[in-house]
Structures are given as structure tokens and as C-alpha cells.
Image (cartoon, rainbow, N blue to C red; front, side):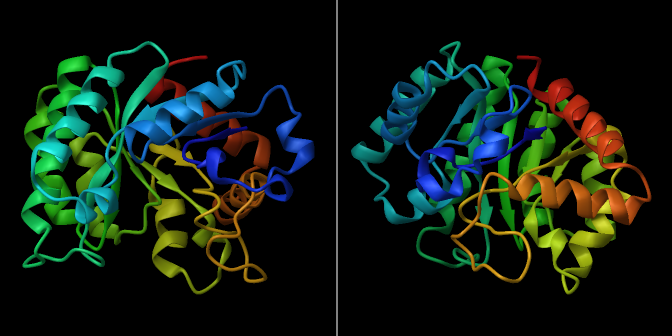
Length: 259
């Protein structure tokens, strides 16, 4: 079972879900937030062949930084590290109009760094992992020139409308569904989980940030939540969990490569 987006480095011991963590078939991609975090994660998990990393400046990090030499130097470090073989993808980058809407003091800076990450993915020929909250049209406007140049892209924790799903699919993007699909009230996510073709669908936990079900709160996600995400989507689509996980694993490998 492959988790396309999990912050393993932020999990507490009780969130590791021992049975799945010991499963030799478990695979996961750890997104980057800023370069020092990614380096520490590499050092911690360098002997764990089931895990792969991405690297970027998360848009929340960019919001909190000044647009000066320090931020530019930090992105230069990201660009240098992104070329290394232990880095599978560029991400997570993107836009967040909930925390940083147009007109926010940091909006132009966040937009500029999103474009810079897309350019970096294009230059390196590596996939792009995108954070998109209440901004799907703006994300696609930024991505379109790079998608036309061959950049491969995954929208993580996807929760868009049916129209937005169609727009992303036409543009060639992959879409990753997370724990909100396990909640009956998350109608957009549950609809998307059925509408996305299996060869473009990935699954994730975004743990610990997200958590499956209603019994735990945000920030209490666990590795084992990927089983609940897979079971819920399989039920919605009327297929077996095995068929669902085989197809989402294949989609992840098509996007990120085999390991």
C-alpha cells in the first residue's frame, strides 16, 4: 500500500501503526517543508528503502518569511538539494487562499515561489506535489505553461468540485484523496473519489495533519489511516480494496517511478 503524502517525520511513536509500518509492501512519500527539515528526515530514514522524499518550501513557510536574501538563499538550497538522487519530487509547493488569499501581504511572494518550484521541477524533470486550498483555478493558471512543457503533477489532499476535477484531468494532473473521504459530510471529496479515473487517482493520509473518521481531530493522523482511506474509496466505487490499492499504487509509480 502506497501513501502518496505523509509527514512521517512529524509522527509520534503511537501514530506509526505498527502492523503497517512493519509491512514490507508499505511505501510512502514524505513531502518537504523547508530544506533543514528535509535533511533531518533524510538522515533519520536514509536506511529505510520504503520511503522517498520530496523537497520544497511549503507555502505556509513562504508566508512567514521575508522576501529578502534569506528566503532567496533558502530556495537556492532547495534547488541544489532537489537535484540529488534521494529527492523524488519537488513539493510540497502551491497556493492556499484560505490562509493567504489574494490581497494578503504575502500573496505575491507565495505566487512567485510556486512558479519558481514549477520551473525547478521542469528543469530537473521531476514531478511536482501541489498544495491547493480554495484556489484551484489560480493553481491551474500557474501550472499550465509547465504542464505543456511536460511537468508531471499531483494535487495532494484534493477536495475540488466536479468541474475542477475535469479541468485538472484535462491538464494531465494526478489527484490524491485523503482522510476527509471517510467523513459522510465531505461530499465534494467523496464525489471526486468516484469521478477520478483509477489511472489518475492516488491515496494519502497527510498524517499527522489529517485524521480519518470522526473520533480524532486534525493533527492526530496515523499511518494506518491509509487503510481506512482505501477501504472507503473502494466501497464508494464498488470495487475491492485490493483492486483499489493496486490501481493507486500503479498510478503513484507512473507519476513518481518505481522503488
